Image (cartoon, rainbow, N blue to C red; front, top):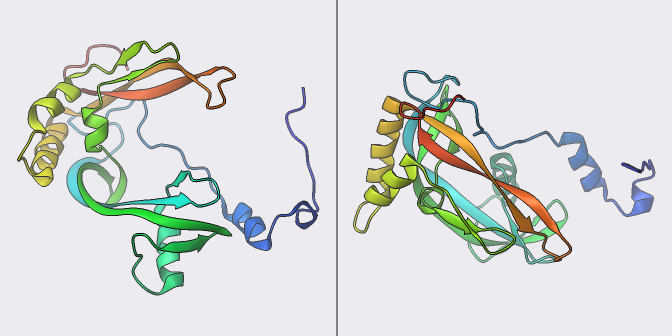
Length: 212
């Protein structure tokens, strides 16, 4: 089985100098939250704490593929610096040789996990309120947890986002947060088969009984 092919004349293959430079600077980046750890509370394993933070939510769209693009903080900061002006929703920008249009730019409150003043990750309202999906056979896959139950009871009409975010952040600092992994089959976009999808399911650490 062939697992890789190697070339060294990159420009002859159509790669621009910008793409070559980007490859030199590319780092491994994985989602911060994972199973087997405790975030917040007296048994925290990562040395952090929860705070309600107002953060920017920025989504671009690649005009060539029509797919959404989420730039990391460093790239957004570099883009703002290169433009020399605030980013405007609906305007197109060149990023790594691609034309991206800024589709969404909004500020949101979220319970945010912070280590030494560095934001590591946060819990979004859509993640907390999403309690099910469907698998490759249209069967319902439920995300059932006490954190989901808390969100459903407290993230309700006429409650300010900053208020429920503060309440949940305080609660997670008291009780801690753990994740389990839910696996289920999903269909490939081209319809040729299936793959195993994985999502994290949140629980309060002080009442979660299974071994981490």
